[in-house]
Amino acid sequence: MSTQNLTIDLGLIAMKNIPRTRNPFRFNSPILLLSASLIFTACQANEEIRGEESAVLTHAPAVPASIERDYPTKVIVELETTERVGRLADGVEYTFWTFGGEVPGKFIRVREGDLVEFHLNNRPDSKMPHNIDLHAVTGPGGGAASSFTAPGKGTIFSFTALNPGLFIYHCATAPVGMHIANGMYGLILVEPKEGFPPVDREYYVMQSEFYTGGAYGEGGLQPFDMGKALLETPDYVVFNGSVGSLTGDNAIVANVGETVRLFVGNAGPNLVSSFHVIGEIFDIVYVEGGTVANQKNVQSTVIPAGGSAIVEFRVDVPGTFLLVDHSIFRAFNKGALGMLTVHGEQQPEIYSGLQEEQVYLPEGGGIQEIQGEEMPVPVLSGAEKIEEGGRLYSQNCAACHQPEGQGIAGAFPPLAGSDYLLADSQRAIGIVVNGLSGPIVVNGETYNGVMPGVLLSDSDIANILTFVLNSFGNEDGEIFAEDVARVRAQRH
Image 1: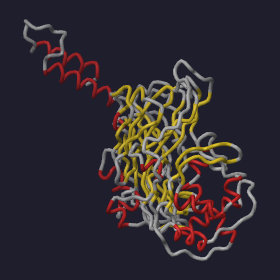
Image 2: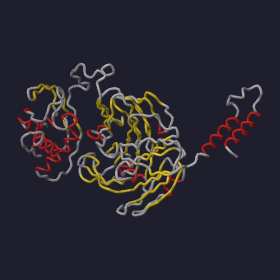
Image 3: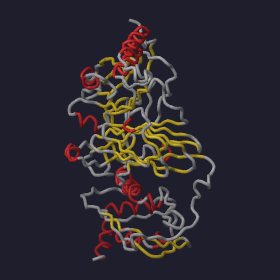
Image 4: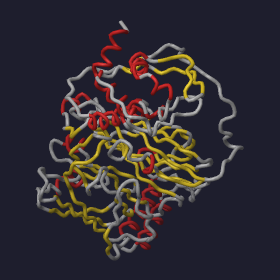
């Protein structure tokens, strides 16, 4: 029976069963509703697959171009699993298991109704078998049952992209949590037949966690820690696979007046994300990666582990906007922080910028302490102390005193060429150990603020100060752990 005949026959049946007192054009009859449903399904079934193409896949934060065709096709997706050592944070390496050589895996974009032929290849030098579970697949294991791939092998399976939306994919080989925790995840977008409204920029952002043998920032090649994973206490919570992957030169960009769409995933494997862009409000949110724009004017959106969201917003003013998980210690202490840099003319009618500056101490002028712990430390050469001190500086000091030691005028004194610092190394040690509050004069400028004492180990403080004394154009100098210990002893 043709779609046209089906429409007529079902319509006649429906009309015969409608009471005469009712309006025949209102969809208040179960038979009419069934008729409409069957007609829609028949039309879907008649949409034929036309042609064939290879999917364009992109590494984060890039997204493949939107799909222009108005018909389904056969799409061939080829993805390779690799295991490689890469950067997790400055001075910290990790053995990542990946889809496509990077974390997160490549972004896949297909159209609703497409027939996807999926090729999964596992490099011969891999140590583990892998597979793939795509949440966009209707079938056992989301494809995992058909894609178990040993090292040096390849598998092929096919599926029809029945449901539009933004979906996670991940490895589901046992132990599943370990494969995900090591970096095996990405996003697949099944674009609805009618497409999404056009925007100026689209980006791919994926949050995830890493559970390492050493604490956050501990250098060297770090192993996976199953104990921490079971306790759900990650050392790192990051965007796009590593600390700083979306900051500085790696920041995503836009121009004033443009509309930005973020495809945001949360691979977990454990934590729920509270995704937020500081200084922006989401005009539209497609909650949980669905295709209905069901929320407007949203400040933060919750993204479950193994879930996603699509957010859109217009950027109205220039500046740097921070992408964060608003479970805020994850952002500023574990790495879940990115940047959107917006270029263009100032818009004072929307945002004035700084109009007045005052000293404000909401927590009082008391010295705070940042907890640390003493660990056995190997003896380092002078060059090694500077290198280690630089890593520690970036984690503990650069936010205030800035990466190049230039400080922030009126707030944090410079360390580069600082007459106050260079005049007395013992005083410098005392400030780091004990903190400092009250006015000081640095290079002729008065600073009146609060610096908390930093309870790092004696050797860590010595390394940081040695780095500062040999960086930013400062003269040579070296601080030893014994020097820090003597100053610390004078405190008691």
